[in-house]
Picture 1 (tube, rainbow, N blue to C red):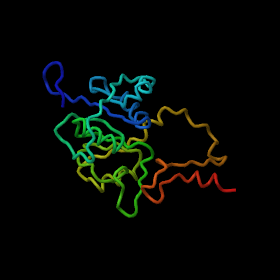
Picture 2: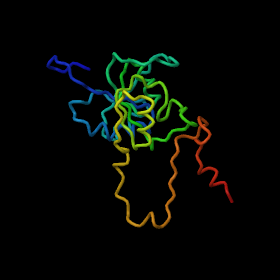
Picture 3: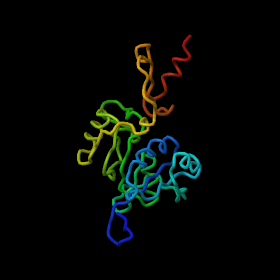
Picture 4: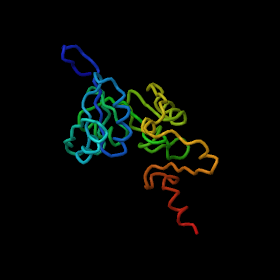
Amino acid sequence: MRMNSGGTSALRLDAISTESQFLDHVSPLWQALPEALRGQFLVAPELMARAKARGIEATPITFPPYVANPPPRHGGPVALVASAGDIKHGRRLGYGPFVFLEHGAGQSYGQNTVYHGAYAGGPDRDDVILNLVPNETCAERWRAAYPATPTVVIGCPKLDELPEREPGLVDQGMVCEVFCCNRSLGYEQPRCIDSALDEP
């Protein structure tokens, strides 16, 4: 909670984005919020021009000293974030609790019920007070892991900016790939398109 100009307590939500894809996902949701609810939009300094191009008046983050695994926080200002990494940045900046917007398709990389902390259902989200997710599969993982935290399926706000789909494209044989980043956090995570393109 932050104090408004009348001296009464009112929720003002700040936003934190430290990578371009997170900024791209948070921006449409931020712009849909009533202006009275918007606080500061903090971005990594190299994202200032990107934020401006998206119509966001951003503030560059001055990063505090690095702390490897900052514990969950509940007594600071509330921040909107779109990644586990930005939750950690937010904690280091004194933020917490968090509203978490799942970026991407909500995929999760893990076997059985053991998930990596960066994906749906992952650990270290005890200071998240609301999950906003793209689909019911993702929501089920968050609800199972954190049953007391509200989880709402809202789709993917970033896709709201896309033009309408042309009829008939799916009939022509469309292939879509969903991936996160080309890392080895889980056996199924590296991009399959790389191996497909290598095939003769």
